[in-house]
Amino acid sequence: MSESGELQKCVESLGISKFKRHIFLCADQTEPKCCSKEEGLRSWEFLKQRLKELKLAGPEPLVYRTKANCLRVCVNGPIAVVYPEGVWYRSCTPEVLEKIIQEHLINGRVVEEYAFARNPLNASES
Image 1 (tube, helix red, strand yellow):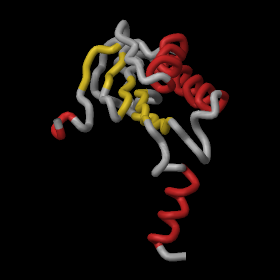
Image 2 (cartoon, rainbow, N blue to C red):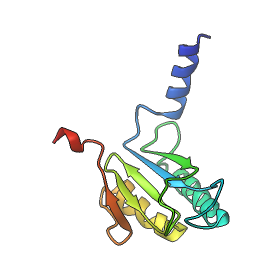
Image 3 (cartoon, helix red, strand yellow):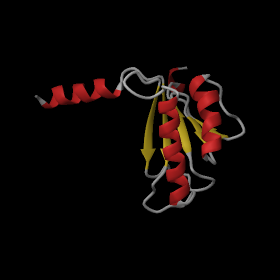
């Protein structure tokens, strides 16, 4: 199989062209600063499991998830950012992630009490 064929197969198996939102979570850092490594990994495992349980991830994903080594906001972590809205969240424990999943990822409403910054991807198009 050619390189581009392998890549296309990967794109299709991950559903990259289908998801509506992408959440990045700072977890498993090389040098943990915003939270302990254990806390970040606990949040990451929760996020993975919950998205699967709610059928938001998988071959027909609505939400794509990425574990980031560091999002460079080294306070009040774990830190997450949701695109395309570009909403940055603090204190992303499993309890907070559940709110983000239910309100933002599913219903499109920002969880204001944990949001601390915004930079939507389409802001330059306005």
